[in-house]
Length: 307
Image (cartoon, rainbow, N blue to C red; front, top):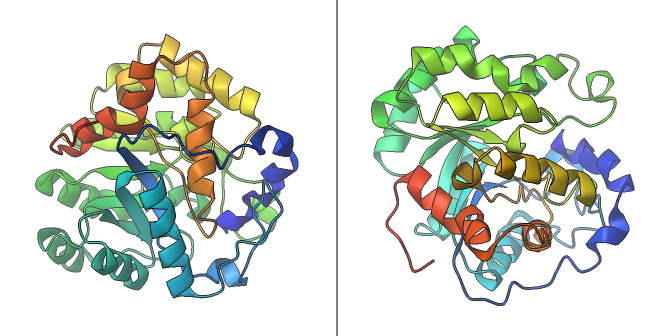
């Protein structure tokens, strides 16, 4: 399903030719949005990267895990929220227990575990985030009754919740996801959930793009809401991404924007996503460090690690 983002890759490829450049500063990064997927996720192995057109180069689940961890070490990613089918998330968590934060995943094909089983995974430290919740692709809003017991559990245990917003490739309702609706990707639709669960720590995945004004409105009123920049930092046209990010910064939200790569089956996407932030000349060094590290530390209630 998410691999259909390949449509977006037809635009802006030239802008990303230097995307593999290491930041080179040795400072820690927290990736709030990547995936523990099988190498053949969505039924195709060695899927071409939508931006470069090059095959992923990974043909097995173990290769994908090893290649992703290699890129994480290369860019000094000290923590990463990895979501996907539960068996894969637990496998990734077991491989790197200190580095991987397991995410409870939901989309049109993957259901959440029942609430009590999920409670056990959270209590055991196997999972640390409720998300990515790709409700939009299943034709659901976060306010749907299906999610209410899970949101109540997250609030009770003080577990962060990550919700997919905005993005959907051209033609998606006619392809994988007939229940997909643009409307459900609008962050403004989360307001009733935030009112019912005032202690919920919620982060808007994909930065709410393209709903800039609605994202600014929700984040301005509800201080417990943060946003990640996953996938929009490398898959939409660079100028569009920078203008969107600039809008969030101008709105005074720079302390609640977090880095994410949305690495799916292309480990090199991590470096591409980092370069998307590094190339934003309007950001100060302090603002970049906030996005790459400090804001996530605060949101996740982690201890600082020298960033």
